[in-house]
Length: 404
Ligand code: GLV
Ligand code: MN
Ligand code: MN
Picture 1 (tube, protein in one colour):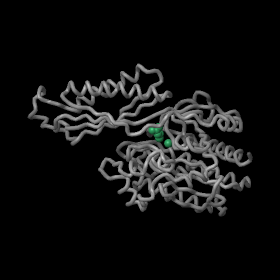
Picture 2: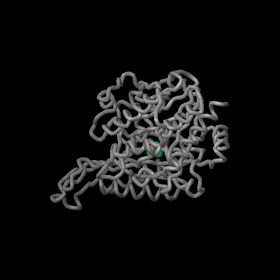
Picture 3: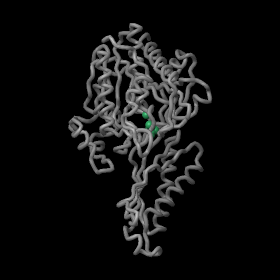
Picture 4: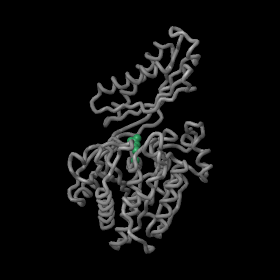
């Protein structure tokens, strides 16, 4: 390793504290392949190279930083650098910064096993609508044809944006070679709930990820003039969309443990003095039982059709993505919890690249306490000592896996 001052997680995050700040929404907006996300990727590469790691960016835009040379049998950790709109500072970057610090610690301890840090693009799906796009492409869960045709709000396809960012879209797709190099993947992430606050512990090991998916309800009516159209003459998809949002809330509230959210409503054309002709309602539904998710979505589809018809509109519901409930490897989970001083074991309602990889390789996750319990918001937080405790737990986990 090249000689350098030992970094801390909080010190690394302080270096990127101004990248992608969103003055309008608050917090950070770092969509994939935006200038801030590119700046973060460069920041990571610089840190990896400073440590003498071999850096490569694969055909799906995943950055890999290798210790001990590129090859099979690697212990891999990492996370993502993109954010939701107006997100917090920790969702993603905490895992990347902790990986760098954990690698330094392993080097200091003389652990020489092959290991890599992976940085996955478009984990949030906030630009192209499909979460964990990099890992879903690598594992072949999503086809390149589907991924490359996805559009951002400006109508630019993933293919166009990736090409403009220096990638060759022709090469996107399942990458069994990259996947085959991973022995075990461990992702560290800020906790996105209150579990650790209530337990008064800094670090947990993950048990599961709630099944989740995204659907788009397109409500179509008649675009018209806000002043010249009598109330009785309107077929307003915004009014139907409002009724549909309320119905989603009511229907989901009837199902124990269900979560249903409409966080994005896109009117076309979107003018104050214009009755919209169309509204796209993006729906996120989650539940531990995958069949229950599908049943709830069917109820929402029926309600949307009826409510749209009452306004003289139509509603069509299309599934954009679905990720089944994930239970992490029980033996690994228990081993890590024991190694980390009987760390608590917690489930999460949030999706992660680790959940996608779990279907193909042995995978675990660590969560670091978030004293606000809030995430996907500028209020997300991690105290400095907890961030360092998280990186130490990651180093201990990787050291344990090296020694098996
Ligand atoms: C990502 O954080 C998600 O759960 O949607
Ligand atoms: Mn995340
Ligand atoms: Mn997130």
